[in-house]
Amino acid sequence: MTHDHMTLDQFLQDLDRDIRAEGDWGEVADYIPELGRIDPAQFGMAIALADGQVLTAGQAGQRFSIQSVSKVFALACVLGRIGEQLWRRVGREPSGDRFDSILLLEQEKGRPRNPFINAGALVVTDELLTGRSPRQALAEILAFVRAAAEDDDIHIDKAVARSEAGSGHRNTALVHYLRSFGNLKAPPDHVLGTYIHQCAIEMSCVQLARAGRVIAGLDCAPVLLSPVKQRRINAMMMTCGQYDGSGNFAFRVGMPAKSGVGGGLLVIAPGKASIAIWSPGLDGWGNSRMGTLAAERLAEFTGWSVFG
Ligand code: GLN
Image 1 (spheres, protein in one colour):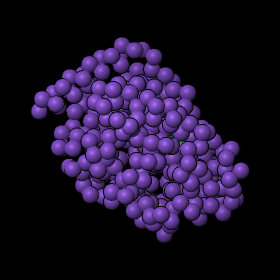
Image 2 (image 1 turned 90 degrees about the vertical axis):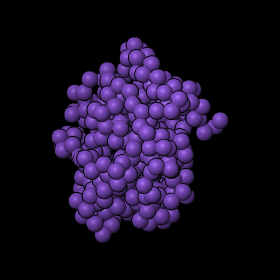
Image 3 (image 1 turned 45 degrees about the horizontal axis):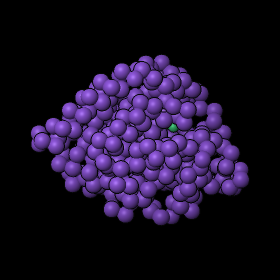
Image 4 (image 1 turned 135 degrees about the vertical axis):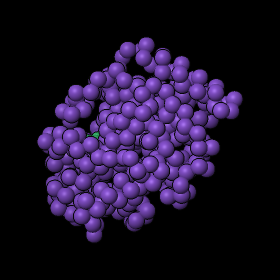
């Protein structure tokens, strides 16, 4: 380890201790019963650096449900496939509403505000289903994530998928609503099933940090995305990655990031590092409470805010 790595590693160990001492973990996402059973008092973190080293803290090897972090990888697949045409079907503005809100869809005639709110992510998944079965579309997302992480041991947690399928009434409403505006091509149940399974991909912080290297454009990363696509995805993560909490996150952390209701957080320091944090207790916006705090402390320590 270089001197800089040792300093960062020491910071991570101190951070793990401090986070565990905080005690205010937030609430787990119990609208998906399988996630509702998880103990919120857990924390893991991994930082993949440009030279290929991965530094870790806490439960960095523990697998968790990546949920909406998967929307980043689905977007990457679709941008790779159809590029800019996607923006005809979905916008790129923050919504200022909850991740599962249906409100703006009526006003904006079925064109979701951005690819990270559920309505927008369902359109992205629908696009992935063009000319493909749900099984093939899922295989494409999984193949992308495995190639990005250079790790084939990444799978879907079927129990989580089943659990969400049994309780996903809002997403069911959203796919039908999109369909009513003509902004859904595949059968609604195919889109919903594929989306729920993509959200149920299970990864550890180490795997997620390694997968995020392709978005951070790290020197050690496999080449899966052009620099333009990396920039586009980072811009979406900065402005929309934490839903109606995105402004607060940019204010506190200043790095592009994507959250999931499993408590995962992928944070990008472009050109420098890909960071994965997991702590399943959520704040009022549905973002990991301790994950956000850890990202904020990391940004303060490293100066990795993109705002200098
Ligand atoms: N599968 C979850 C849902 O659609 C993902 C939401 C999230 O992680 N914010 O409700």
